[in-house]
Length: 87
Image 1 (cartoon, rainbow, N blue to C red):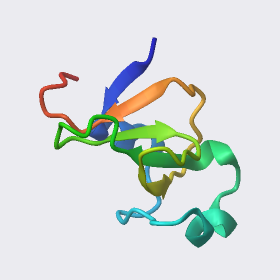
Image 2 (image 1 turned 45 degrees about the vertical axis):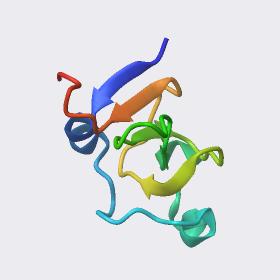
Image 3 (image 1 turned 60 degrees about the horizontal axis):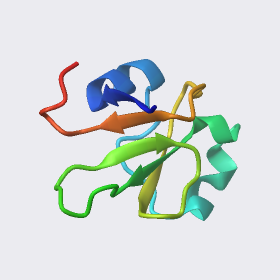
C-alpha cells in the first residue's frame, strides 16, 4: 500500500532543487546524481484537478520531473497536492 505525504512535507524532507518542473528527462539527466533524486509529476486521476508526485522516472501520465537534494528511499511513496489530504 502506498504511503501518501503532502506537498509541503515533501518540500521540507526532500528539498526540490528548483521551483520549476522540468518537461523532459533529457533536460535534467546531467543534473541527477542518482535515479533516487528524481521525481515524476503525474496525473493519476484525470477527473481531478490535483496532481501527484511519485519517486523515480515514469513515462505513463507524466507531466514533468523534479530533482531533489535528498534521495527517496520508498518507491511506494506518493506526494499529493490535494488540500483534503490531512498532514
